Length: 178
Image 1 (cartoon, rainbow, N blue to C red):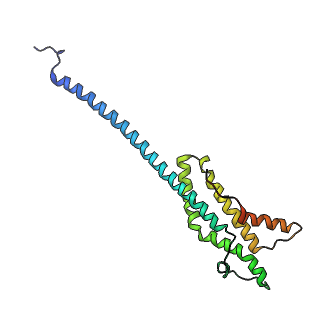
Image 2: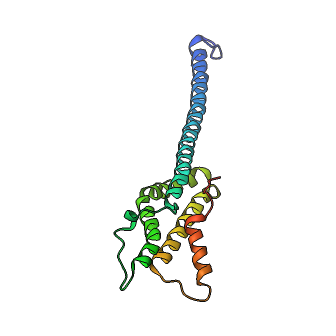
Image 3: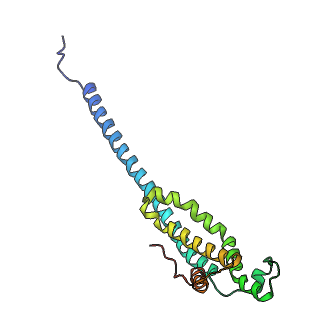
């Protein structure tokens, strides 16, 4: 009769194999976690690079949009008002050209809008404040240009209001994404 407590090679190798399997599984799970973190970091880097590209593009786009130099061809298709003389029409032209420039860069603003949610998902809501600043700058330019182009400015403070709107349209400082 054999001793039931005597170990042979088969049970010993089975136990060793069991521990080896546990070790491989554990290191595999750790490797998977590391791989997952690496993929997330790669995505963060890709989004950050895309945001930086848009930041540099943003500076150029706003320099083009806010450029006070206007060619007559930029507003040649602007409709005339009833009984509007050439002087008044030419005075409104640069603001119409500004609106056309904003429209011409619609694809840039669309790219910016599409990037914002992904940027917020990876870096948090406060990190996306720069996107809000760009939207606000665009809104100031558009509203000022629309007002100067389509609405007469009247009242006792008309000249100051016009100067302020022209400054919002052309003079506002450089955009920066911090």
